[in-house]
Structure formats: C-alpha cells, structure tokens
Image (cartoon, rainbow, N blue to C red; front, side, top):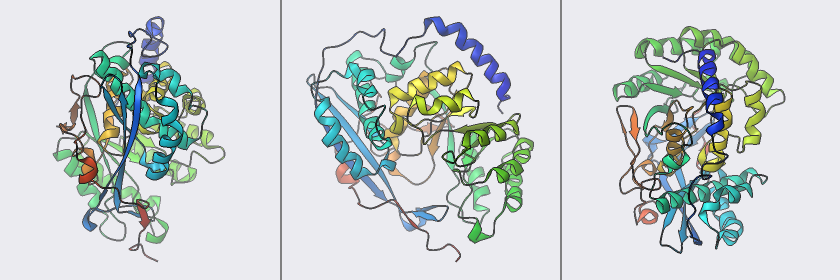
Length: 427
C-alpha cells in the first residue's frame, strides 16, 4: 500500500531540489543533432466493432466500437516514426486537421526540433493539440531510431530510466446497476488473480435511473476490499460525476478502506472546481487525489499543481503530446507530486505513455484499459504485454515496436461516434 501523500511529497521535493542544478531545460538539450528531414505524414484510421457481449457501459451510454488514429511520419533517411492522436478528438476531424494544417508545415523540418515544433501548437485549440500529439510521438520515435536509443532513455534527464513498469488494471465499466452489480466485485478478484496489484474502477451506469446513492454504493466498496484483501491497491474513478457533497460523504470510507487515490471526483470545468478539489484533498489525509486527463498544456496544469489540488497529475501523451507531457511531469516533480498518465486507449497510446513513465523520477504506475480491444496488442508485430502486473519495455531504438503491414485491412475504419445511448437503462 502507498505511503501518505505528505511523506512522499516531502521526500520527492527534496530530491527534486538536490537534482535541480543538473536538470536539462528539455530532453534533447545534450543530445547530438542529426541531419534528417521529414518527407511525409500519413494518417490511418483503425476501428474494431465490439461484439454485443463485450460492449461496455458508462453513465447513460453504451460503447460499441473502439478507434485508433495511427500517425506515421517519414524522413529522407528512410527512418519512419509512429504515434497516436486521441480518438476522443474525433478520428475524421483529427485526420483532416493533420493533413491540412500540420503536414504542410512539417515537411522539410528536422524531427530534432520537436521542442520548437511542439511549441507552435501550445496556444491552439484542444483539438489542434490532440492532432499534434500523434505527430509529436512519431517524431520522438524517429529521434530514438536516429540515435539508436530507446525513447525512454532520451527522456530520462536525471537518474536512471526504469523500463520495468508497474501496470494497474483499469475497468469497472462492464457492470450495470440494473443487472448484476456484483460483477464489479468479480472483476476486481479476476484482475488480482491475473497478477495485477491495483484496480481502478468507475461508478457504473447512470445512478438516478437505477436508484443508486452514496449510501447504497458504500457496501460494494466494503465488499470489494474484503474480496481482494488489504494489500491490493484500489482506485476510485468518478469521471467528474459526483457533487462535492457526495465526495465529502464518501471520503471517510475511502480513508478507512485504504484506497490509493480518488480520481476526478467533481467536474473540473465548473466554477470553483479547484477549491472543491482542495476541500476533498483536505478530507483525505492519506488517500491521494488525481486528475488532469482533460488538460493539454503545462499552463493548464500549473494552478492545479501550485494550489495542491492534485497529488497526482494525469496527462495523456495522445492529448498533450509526449514533449508537453514531459514538461508537465517535471513541474509536478518539482512540487513533490506523482505523474501517472491517463492511458485508456490502444497500444499506440500505451507505447508513448509507457516511455514517459519509464523516464520520469516521479512515476508510480501506468493505467491499462481492461475492456475488449485488440488494438491494444494486435496492431504490433511484437506487442507490449503485461506479465504478473508489470510491462517490460524493449531495449530497442525509438519506441521499440513496429505496426503490422496490414493494420488498415485487419481493422478497417468504421464511421460514427463510439458511444450510443444505452437502450437497457431503466426509464
């Protein structure tokens, strides 16, 4: 189980200050530049339609397919890089934006200028930033291959990288309050038996139409803790669906049951959101508070970090870009906070987030989506896999993985939004 946030913050902040003089302004500051130029950018949209028995639920919606946006960047040296932009940006919209806005300005540029190139999109819209994120990762893949180094080694600017990454099972979206809620308990046990040491879960299908309240929810948390035992980490994800009052009601329960962290408890876009997070944090002496998957730049994160609204920051490389995520992690480290990236999508996103986690000193573990999704592993010739709750990154140049040649044929794109209204919810 985790130590308290205060003891962790004190030790981490002290280490950060002692290492401050040796830190680089950006990861490539001391890396020799290669003469290489971008010649083309290609976007491939991939999809997988979930069979009816594998479709998952959240709130009032049903998820019927999963998408991926494969970004490939080519160079005059025959080196190609791969990345992924978040499908939450809308696959067709992201493809169009990259092809019409990013590609023309990128051709002829040197991938080693990724810091400068990334900065050009910092002040743009969230959609522009998401589109850039996949390109950003692909440039890092090229840089690693050009230098003959894994990306995580290039990103590691202090200490030694740790490519043996603790992964946590992320799910809790396959149970329904109107069917068999104990499916959630069974899922927790299943992940423990498969070797995971931590499980993050959501609050299920829409509460109002299922007559669920905090008081009715608490017994399931108690039952889960009893089922997995005291030494298995539990993480409550709310997806910003609770009120401040509901969060404060459940805080003592999370403390008593020794949860590891409490994620996105209230709407971070609402007025007074930072103050609400601070109140929740103060009600949790040991349980950490996390968030930030909706944020895209270090500026977005800064006030949340400075005011101690987050104990854990959760950027996602397929939204922020790997370059910006490195800066966000560094700011968090200076303030004695963990960085545990959001990582819900397929393998192309995991490869970038895993490289970041392996490189930074303030990592804890990395999320891995447990819903049915062959885009996690089957897009690669040699996939990244989890064994006994850990993922070992390859000691190969770039991200160390290659996409299969027939990915577009094997996973043809399916138009349409990935969520539909859940027809089974009680009226």
